[in-house]
Length: 162
Image (cartoon, rainbow, N blue to C red; front, side):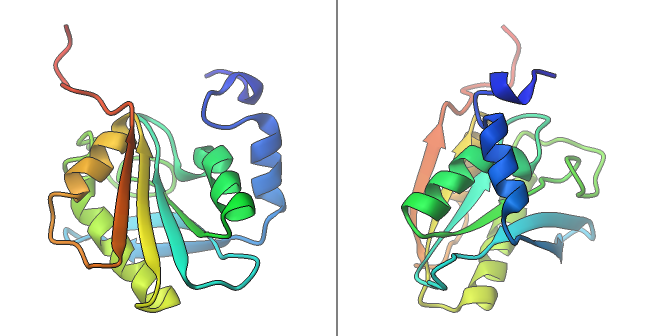
């Protein structure tokens, strides 16, 4: 694994920043009975208006999106949710489905956000690499109108090896 300073997603300073924030560890149960973990960073300004759900790449975990979390929290005043996908981080599961299995979990994370902050929030799904594919697949599900944007950064085009 690369050292945090070499990590494209988050620098060591971003990870240190996240560790200094008052985050809340949250859990949901997937539709097929897995216990899923996430890290919730409420807006410092107390705004319930905007929330981003971040999705990371293959073999990562939610907190590795610290650089994006910092941008959305500090610069935009967003609430931030960083889930650990099934089979990653502190979430249960033995199968990595490259976003296909996780898409339904993200629909549940969206519902968790709506219960936590209320139906007036606007939600962005932002993913990179496998997380980019995950948020695109989530976009194919029936989503509430509060999901206003999906940002997919460098999603894979095929899971087949070339």
